[in-house]
Image (cartoon, rainbow, N blue to C red; front, side):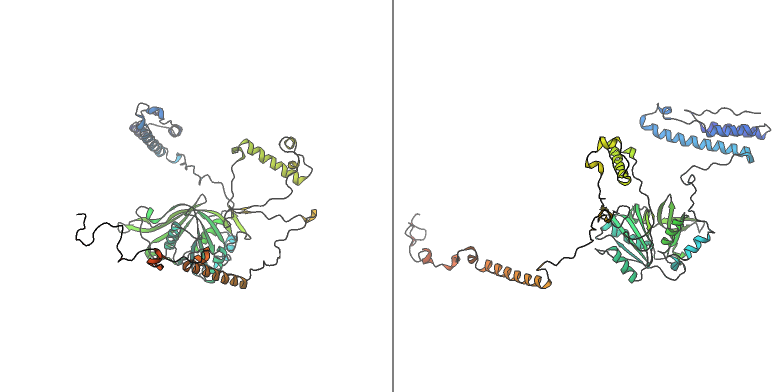
Length: 503
């Protein structure tokens, strides 16, 4: 049995040495030298676990060149090890170990019970009778309405125009200040099949709502990594051909619903002559949107993709049955909010949270004791805790992740409280009818007219002196000015001479 020599792996690791040794071993094997399978497998594992270079191996180089040299050497060593392992696999033949798959998030994902199989009769029956069945049975054609947040800015408008470029039969309307529920009703009356609402934050699009009409469902997505067409290098121009739709990795029951919602936005029969394709790729619960056109090269032997834009990523936040109604609607799925761990909080905040929790337990149980915490941190009336639950309302009402609403406390009848009504009937305030307002406006208009007229023509009547004449209304005699023909006694010159007497 011929052994394998020890390969130098370290500071002066050379790819040529590995390949020479591999070739020599294989030649020896082919010439009749017996190399058993156990030795090859052992060598295979040694190469896989062999040491590589470190930062300390490049101390002799200048500091600015160490990083580049380290990266190049690591890549070089990796290729050499891969080549050696491939040689050993060829020598082992059928006894070669199976190739290992890289451990990625997708390959190590745990089995999900909600994954849908192709032959699932229950899912097929549900999809044949869901809200999208009318579209997939070709009973309706898509008609899309695209709108945005009230008083949207330029970037949001630009994103809406980019969406209209991707989605055929889509129209854009300014929402202005119309409530979203009213927009849904108007879209249903105009026979629109889908409604797209783009939300913005800090003058940039940050969310989008897809609402299938007339029966729903409604989904809210977060927008990330948005790039417009002009920001994409080597971007092409879109055409009016109906695009193909590619939906990848929507394998769960929820994914099927989202994929069918996306499919309802586009017409049934794509025009393959235009070679347009719109891709929704789901990976790790992020949906990547891409818009491409196929390009054939070398007389159809090769194909390439030309991106048309836009490019963005969607993250599903919630899915709701029916049309938009965040207050009374039924949510099928809501993304869980993961608050920061208590261990990340400071000691005082953690203690305060513990005290509040114990207060709540004591208030519910009634007989439980707070123990030493009660006597150390709270006393008197504070130890009893508040008897009235406090509700609050905050965040955007169109996003249930941010909008939390606790019912307003109106009293407890079992404890003798009188229920506070929702509203009170009261008599209208006097002088607020339509006729009263008209009379008030008319009288105020007359007073303003009188004031401005007198201020312009004779303000003396207003300010106390009855009249203040202008200077041109007086005569020269009233002002004490002598006539022009009378000689001026104060002038000593002689007007009869040409140049005067002073000369």
